[in-house]
Image 1 (cartoon, rainbow, N blue to C red):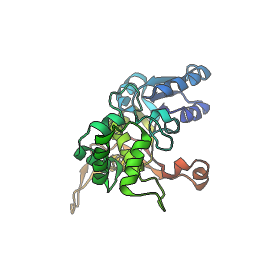
Image 2 (tube, rainbow, N blue to C red):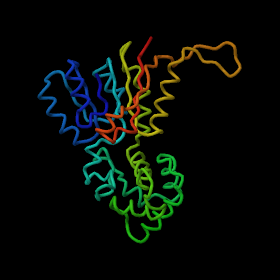
Image 3 (spheres, one colour):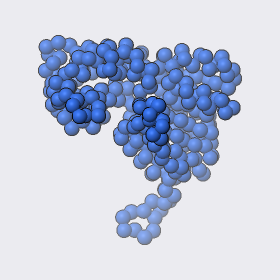
Image 4 (cartoon, rainbow, N blue to C red):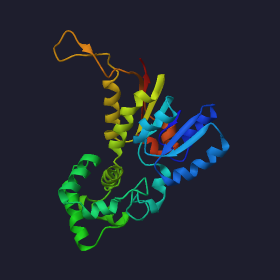
Length: 280
């Protein structure tokens, strides 16, 4: 099995407990430290590589093919809960958001250097935020007075611009923070690379599972599986089709978290799991 998003090892441990051999990937240095205990506990059955899942093709050439590949997208709970990582405004911390701490561009650098149109575009595109232009304008105005380096600073700028939280389910800065995180870590680009490599990295009958947490990710995964699950392509109004050159998957299904799971782990409320099986 390939656990392409190790995090702190919950999925890897569950796979190992069934007797599977597991290769795990993560770009986070803290994840590499956490993986050491599994290496000791499951000698020979567990291997870890510090890498982005966009490198899935190279990993499969060395250690694949795999009977199963799991992608658990987005930011992990330990990253959210560590103020120093700068992913969340729940605790004040440096405005960082880098999943790979060795990466060059942090959220603070992006917020303080990007031109207003660039900020507006990425907040709208990656955050699905209809008030992106107002927020970008406010950020540029605020940074002219004082450099924005803290998560609380940015959250306060956004909240002052678009209004308070009365009656809202999420903080007004949530979408802006999501957009910056996706941009800093090129999350959608990495996902496209991993999905493209997945069919060749799976054995026949092997399964791909992808857990996503927002519509941008889920839509990308849904479309990827859908375009590879139709044996025949057909134009509008055409009675006969032609073979689909990308046909390689059978859809397995889509699952949502149960109420009991959401009650135990509120962060699971927006999770979507999609599955597909590799076929000839």
